[in-house]
Every structure is written in C-alpha cells, then in structure tokens.
Image (cartoon, rainbow, N blue to C red; front, side, top):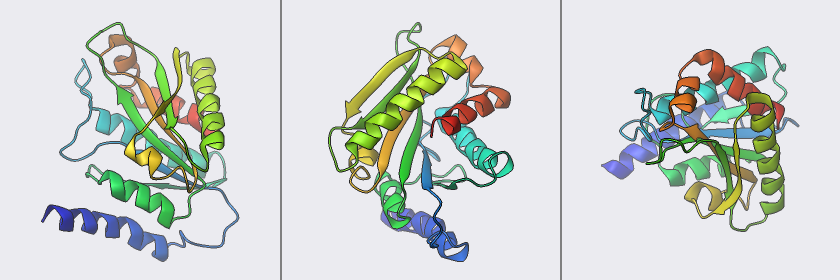
Length: 207
C-alpha cells in the first residue's frame, strides 16, 4: 500500500508534465526545485514552532513566482511537490531525470543541539558526471546568500545524500541547508514571507 501511494504521488507529478508541455523542445534551462520532507515528515522543528517542510515549500513556491513575475519565465521551474505531501527520495530524483532537468536543487533547513549553531551549508555529491558544475553552483549559491542575505557560510561540502547521488549523473545538483531552525535569529528570520522571498530571490540571482 505504501509503495502504491508513492507511485500515485509520482504520477500526479508526471501527468502535468505532458499536459503542460514540461517535456517540450524549449531551449530554456529546466530547473527542478525539491522542497524537502512533506506530509508526515515535518523535518526540523523550529524553536519558534515553524516546520522545515513548510519553510522550504514556501521558498520553492516563491522561486516559481519570481521566475514568472519578475524574470519573464527565464527558466522552466518545476517542483517535486506543490503541496504538503511526502514524496519518496527515489521519486524526487526520478522526476528530475524524467524532465531532463539541467539543475536540481533540494531545499532544507538545519537543526542542532547547539542553539548557537548558525549559517548555511551547501552539499554536493561525492562524485559524478556533473560534479564540477555542481561545485561551482554550490559556491555561487553560498556566496549569494552570504552577501545578499547576510548568512554565515559554513561552506560547500560533499555528501552521499540519495537525491544528490541519483541526480548528479544527469544534471547539476546541490542540496541547500538554509539556516538553523534551532537558532532563534535564523528561525525567526524564516518565519516571515517577506524574508522567504528574499531568500528565494538570492537563490534565483545565483543561478
């Protein structure tokens, strides 16, 4: 039953692809934004009560809005989830492959037992066909968030996260940890939609 549910979620994501030309011959760069967690998996819980799954989905939706309203649909941007649903890690990566994505960005927030831990982290796969492009994008993203938002950068790091290793051979791929929800300053910053928009704009400007 669990596997059937995952397949149904995947089909709900893929069917609009054909309906709205997501596999079109457009020359635009195709970007898949992956808001982490969702559904029963809330991710990290902020000290102020906000949930990681909601924060990253808001940022992902804002990226879609910015692309349309301010940048005249410069890119083709699609999300692995548009609502509060849980999509398997395997299906998130499979969707990027199905769409022939050029860039895959997985959005997350951090958490630590140390309330003073702060800053952003960018992760790339340990190796793969597009590892160099991924590292370059990772540095661009951390630089933009540091300079435009004021985040402390904790660097670009290597990791064997499933969504990274299953997409790096097909496209440029990174995973962003956008601040610590265990830190009062950073979790309160991410609480407002205005600041969420600032974060999304910084990500967009770094692409």
